[in-house]
Image 1 (cartoon, rainbow, N blue to C red):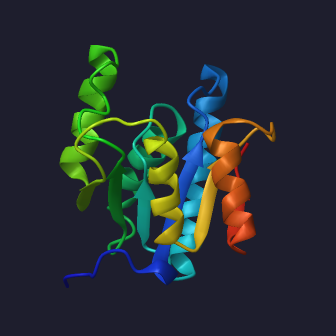
Image 2: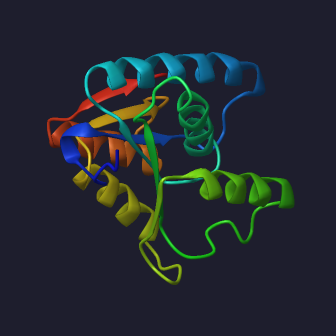
Image 3: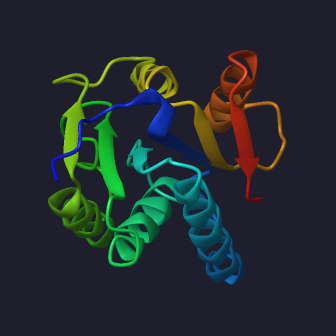
Length: 162
């Protein structure tokens, strides 16, 4: 069955910090699996990921791992600019490419980097979803703060796994 992409009512956006303490990663993965599975039971099967280092890529990997159990689950990568991973270390570049190869859809928002493109990516994800799963420490700075604040302004549910 072919699914339409970017159905707001069926979509989850991910946002979170770049750094997750190594001793926390397994707990975060477990919480992600539970949160995505619960959202799926509520009709949310499209997962929109900004493909940043840290929480985003962790979330993408968990969605891919859940696809065997949740047959209609989809992963949509929203890439802020072509070559997003070009300055990352080789292992993270390979991880990124591996995830992108397994997504259901890749949306590239710009051919080149420009100041503010990461926030525009976050805005795009919020415009196309109605539910957010976050890994947010509560500090009032940075992209995760911005995205959680904007989601709440829009009346969206934000599930924080921090």
